[in-house]
Image 1 (cartoon, helix red, strand yellow):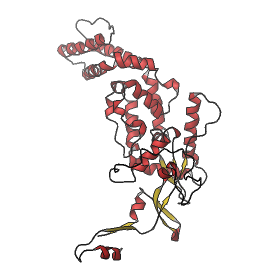
Image 2: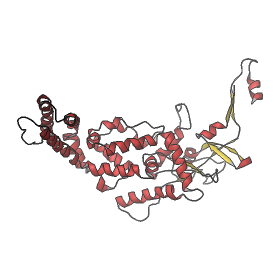
Image 3: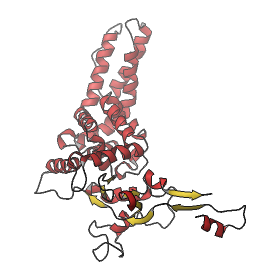
Image 4: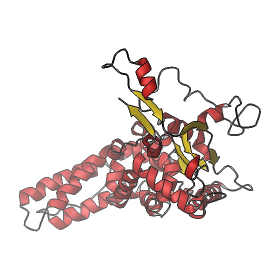
Length: 361
């Protein structure tokens, strides 16, 4: 490296930076694991369960050449880097709190950012309420019994959704009142409650004179019950909560939003592969290709135009120095290896790879 730097130096004081790996550099082709073999002719719910069980079994049981500990270690590493943990905390808080917060739908603009681009969360904030619910049902792989009926979601979206912010405001107003509230405060709160009842076509009991705190609490309870039961949202939120808090919940979430999990076996570092959900495997691979570069991808790159068939990685059906198929191009990644003590293998964009890139100023 010193010789190269000296050769290209125009003078003793002006010298270029030279960068090179200290280990042998190659371009490896990891394998893939997915849920592409669902036996029989299952119902939609049975297929959902089978596919989830397949993916979970990799997390809990490992497979040929790798262990469950390998998968769980890599998930722990990647989930922190990508931001999956922040997502799990977000969904857990949202689905375990006040259902009105979920119904208000402001949360669609508050989903934490991720370091990768999952296709099923792409442009989520632009979805309508029924489409957002359907997308979450897909992401969390919910059975049909937990998913609100499309007709109910459409009705809620047009008749109740516009009034949820006013209902939440009225609810907060009533919750803030105490037994020492003045009559003016009670009357003002009643005005807000009655306005929500009118806009949502709900008939409340006649207000007593003077208005009491108990009446306001009963009335706001009726309005909240109507809003939350109309789209039958409680089973939906409970089902998401169950998925999020499961031991393999974050791992499955990463796959079902459309991201891969890259795994390297500890016992044999040359064993590297991606775990992919079949339904989104192409976009999952594209998301991983993009993070190989620190800078924005240049115009003309092929990341979005490759069309893999997830069959052969080369055009003659073998590995080695052959012309790669689109699948081979998607899988190929830079690697550094040291056969002296192992062997050791480090792949881009893992931190260990960059530890073995040396720069001379």
